[in-house]
Each structure stands twice: as C-alpha cells, then as structure tokens.
Amino acid sequence: MIRSIRALTVSCFLSMFFIGVATTIIGAAARNIGLTPYQIGMFMTVQNLGFMLSVILSGALADTHDKTHILFVGSSVLAAAFITFYLSKAFSINLLIMCFIGIGTGTYEGVTDAMLIDMHDRRENLFINVNHFFVTLGSLMITLYLIFLQMNWRRSSTQSGIVVAVLALFFLLARLEGGKKVTESLLTRLKFLMRERAVGILFIITIFAVGIELGTLSIMTTYLMEFRGFTQVTSKVALSCFLAGVASGRLLIGFFSKKRQIPFFIMLLLASAVILLCVLFFTDLGNYTYILAYFTGMTFSALLPLVITLAGLMYKEYAGTVLGIIKIAIPIGGSLIPFIFSMLSKHVSFKAGLALFPIFAAAGFITLASGWKQFRQFIQGSSRS
Image (spheres, rainbow, N blue to C red):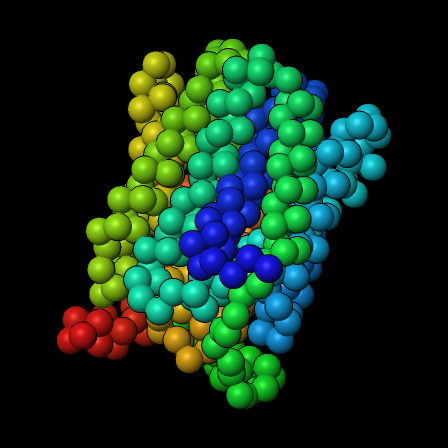
C-alpha cells in the first residue's frame, strides 16, 4: 500500500489538474466540434449538475470512508467519460457523458482539499491555493495542447482518459492514515453553519466567482472569433493568456497573502473584475486584447481558493463540513450563470449574454461589502495571532 504524504499530496494536485482539463476542453474546442453558444451553455450546465451531485455525496462520504477509495471511484468514472466523449455524434449521448465528467471532477473537488487538510497541519492557505492552481494549469495546458495538436481535440481527450485511469490505479493502492474526526452529527453541524451569515455570504460569492470564470472560459474563443476577427489559433492564444493570468495570480497571492488579508483580497479582486470584464467584452483593443485577457484572468486568480480558505479558517472545527457547503456553490454557479447566458444568447443576443459577467461581478462585490462586519472578528483575531 502507498502511504507517502508527498505522493498523496502530488496525487491531489494531479487530480485538480484534470478538473481544469474537463472544464476547459469545451470552450477550447467548441468551434472545432461545431457547437453553438446554446449548446456550449447546455454542456456546461449538465456538467455542473453532475458535479453538484458528486461534490455533495463525496464530501459527505469523505468524513466516514477512506478518501482514497472515493477518489478511485471518481477517477474511474472520469477516465471512462474522457475516452468516450464524442465517439458518437449524438448531442444527447454526449450530454450524458458530460454529466459523468462532472461526476468525476466533483469527486476530486469534494475530497482533495479535505485530504490536504488532514495531511498538513500548517500553511493550509498555501496548499489549497496550490491545489487550485493545478486546476488553472490543467486549463492552460489543454488549450496549448490543442494548438500544438492542430486542433485534434479528440486525441487529447483520449490521452487524458488514459492518464486518469492510471491515477485511479494509484488511488486504489493508496491509503491515508489518520484524519480528523468530528463527534457531532452531520445534521448538528449543518444547523450551526446554516445559521452563520458569513457562510451564506461566501456561498453567494462562490456562485458568482465560479460562474463568471467558467462562463468566460467557455465563450472566450467564440466571442473573439465572432466579434474581434480572431482565428482558431489566435483566439486560443488569448484564452491561454487569460489562463496564464489566473495561474500566475493564484500562485502569487497564495504565497504572499496573510490570513488577515484574505477578505481584503477577495474584495479587491471582485472590484477589478467588474472593470476589466467591461473593457474585455465591450472594447476592441486589437492585439492589446492578449494583455487585457491576462489581467482579467488575474482578477479571478485566487477568488475561489481564498473563499475556501477563509471558510475553513473561520470554522476550523467544522472545516470539512463548511467546505462541503461552500463547494455546493461551485456547480450552482457553473451551471446557473452559463445557463442564463445560453438563454440570453439564444433569445436576445450574444452581447446581451456577455453583459451578465460584469453585472454578476458587481453583485459579488456588493454582497461582500454589505456583510463586511461578519469578517471583522476574523481579521482582528488573525492580526493578534
């Protein structure tokens, strides 16, 4: 049996890498497959519905069952889905396969952060940020890989499935010893946390942050080709710049932010997102679009890992449960906002759908600002420590 903490940590990072691959491949290959904006939105919606079911179930099971066994099941499902995606041209069949992709990635999201908290007693912020950095790295690598494969996205999907199958074998042989136990029942923990306004605020911000980021990832290449005259390759280069901004910002903030600064960083990133999204989607900057895409990506860089870290630190005694609650917002945001975009683009216009993204970023900023006093005690306590 494999019990190395280092190997298990790396396996968590690699798992998150394939979340990035799964969430980006539709946006990067949409034009090659021949998807319409409506179909893109439906794929993202179904994927995130599967993610929602999985993250709830795997998060609950992680408190009572071996985490590596749960990850083995999730990896097996994801590997099969990657290999079979678009072997058939039937849209309905691929919608179902996309649901299974969501189930596999939801298992990774539901278990890996809790697993890292079990394995590492200090610097949780760093490990969670690095863990989510690998999501961005996966998104960036699959985009670049499609460019170098000359758009042969089917090959990349099959190869991803093979690697995930190897990862499933690793989890089958691995064991995580120990782990933090909670004596209170799940119902007791849920009742307490659901009464906490701070949990609700972070939940809402997560919906906005995830929905905007995934929506932008999904429609970036289509938007640039239809309205800005980009080609198949140059639009993917712009998407790569966006992902590079997310990746670099996530690492920088993860390494240098202090605990007491987390709420301030969340507010700053949301405010920046409002401005840069407006410029990106409603201003033609020509070749400067690549630079703008990079800095827009930076605004999304650490939003999700910072929210997850903040929730875990504020309710450390119930960290696993509160992270499970917050992560339910990931598929809600990832399905709701792309679905609204899909409906607007079909029944109004593509540009009307684009306006949603800065509007939701502003709503996230207002939500955090309205409940700022909920985080003062955490900031003051972190300053004293």
